[in-house]
Image 1 (cartoon, one colour):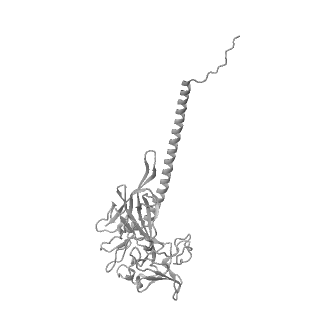
Image 2 (image 1 turned 60 degrees about the horizontal axis):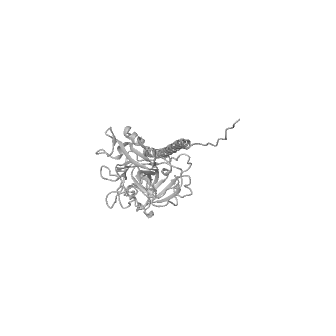
Length: 393
């Protein structure tokens, strides 16, 4: 019997080439699927991050704008009224609050310049609950952005429990705590006694209401005048019938030019002590401005929040557009989506703020370019809306 020799035949060159081609196709498909999966995951993470930033920004905007003009715990708030700022004589224009000049600040956060408070119909600079700022923001990708300022009463500090008394030069105010407490003294929730007006990092730990700080804006009387705390509060000796006393400076030289003690109109000097320094009059105001800026540290357009003379805080990065309109009520007629005030009206007649554009863009490109969100919504300034629709004479 004849046996066949052992076969040592391998793959032919053609077979190897076909196998390699099939392997490359399978590998290429796997790489493509992996790459697409990674890109999809990146896009999803970018959107998730934007949604979180977007939600945080919208929540802050909604909270502050809806509080515009609100009083607190029975204290006197701005409401639909206005407070006259120093005018006439040797007065200079008052500008939005910022930190101390000693820190190298010249109130130029907003588009590199200082922003002055608006004038009333009589030409007097005034503080309103809502102050629109159409076209006062920076330009991003050819779009001129807006700013907005809202003011409301801060109920976290029981300042209305104290009785203020001004010195002759209108540069120092003493706040004394009566015994017993007056009926107008309404304490914030979870507070058992009026807080000390002396601020320190220790007593402020976990309690943002503790004490008065430099830059705090205080409203006195029935929208009579405002002053800005210019230094640390110190203890003083209470007179008979009072259990505590604090001395608070309101000296000239604050960066916003609110304290002008030599000007009789619109300053603390113009207060009538027996009428406008009653026990229920003082209230600390919260003044908040939203605007876009490009911090040198990031180079990214960023939504900023400036509160009561403190250093501005970033809210969200890559916000590329910010525009507002507002609804205004005049003679019982509501005019929606205004960008400028109707002739013969003031910001006190604004009842609703419309976010025309709050546009956020992803930091990096996705599959087809940058991801983005754009919000349009309306926020009612509750206190002003009720005042316009249900006026109380």
